[in-house]
Length: 209
Image (cartoon, rainbow, N blue to C red; front, side):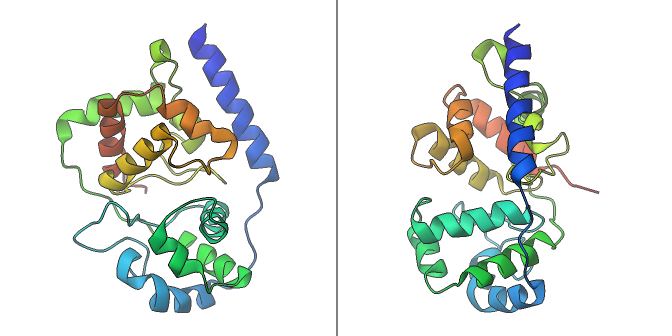
């Protein structure tokens, strides 16, 4: 019964948020110019990151433009806290942020690197089925079975495992609280650190066609 209740709640959230989502309007070519001047060093010109990876610097390629724009706005307003990003977005206009979101959303995400293959099976199970006994819903319920995401639920396939783990921990601790309805906080508070690590490793290895 618990599994079906969790599923119903997540489906309801997906329908509600998806219905109000609208991709931003702008010019991705202008976004590329800004990316080459402001974002290149940390995120790479195509949004696939740089090497060596830094857990603070995520891949942006292929993420939903709605999600990317929300994050930029949240950094600008201080709702999402990060000293580096606060400085980066300080001079960006609303049009600049919309252009950036469209540009990075249009880039193809490359696969990540799996560093602990022993955790892949556990990570896949949690992502696809959740952990009903602990009240953890399936991640796929919002982020899609292939981790391609939808509207405000971001594309996660191929993301650096270190970054994913760091964000899950921040949601868990309440340090990050800019998720709609605190959905990610309510999920991660029921997860163990190993479960978070396992999901992060699994997502890193997913490659979209």
